[in-house]
Length: 330
Image 1 (tube, one colour):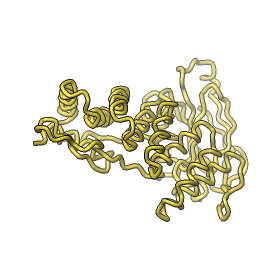
Image 2 (cartoon, helix red, strand yellow):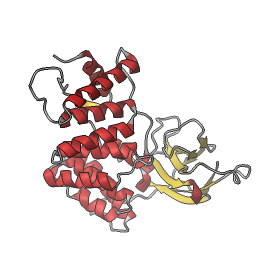
Image 3 (cartoon, rainbow, N blue to C red):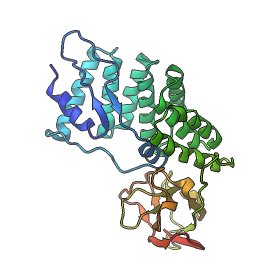
Image 4 (cartoon, rainbow, N blue to C red):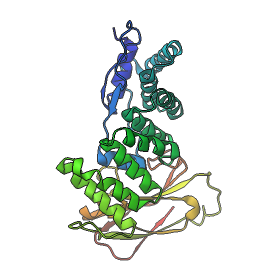
């Protein structure tokens, strides 16, 4: 019998996972399948989330509300005290804590799960993604990358592991390696997914100074942007880790950018060029728009999603192609 608190967890996780197979901790004897969930990640979505950072993607949808959900998580923790060797239970706890926004606890739970089942490729990939989600800059650290590479060794057909390894390589500035990693995935992808990935490969190759693949269109439209601090704020100390995001998005459209770059606030004043190589989603590139809105954000949290206390520059609307420098003041 599946308990009510597990149904609450499933209701929450439905917002961010493709499916949840509930783990019947209170039933007798029968062991649940190892992987309790499959995270629904598209090529575009994961690029936006891990390379840039997005607003909180999870809403509590259970009728009981957060208190009921948190109570369920505590019961799951108590069950794991009785059966600490349940890798599937630790993985479920990791997903539940992640859904609640408790990334540190989620990563601790995923680490326990990986220690118990170190050769389960889906778990390794999920745990690596959780570590990136818990990082202020959405970066895959060395441990996460090691897990991804081991997942690929265990399951060479894992498209998700290959895709995330490529993202981790791009985060490290290893664009040529990322292009090679993604190119190896192409033969196994459906046509639509392969087309989207080819665009990311072309971007990675351009960043690495490599020639574009045959038949690929290199990015051509770009925006030259200068970002400075307002003189009245220039002398004020900024919190450690403050980041500057330079964002281009469709005017009046969705908040997701069509191009974005992140730099430490210590790099101000900035002079950059935004182009299709900075598009976090392969299906929504800068060059695909006629008009764009450009602005800069000073983020103390280090994430692109707006938080209390963040400072945005006045947005500037331009028509593409645009010549000259766009000047933004924070």
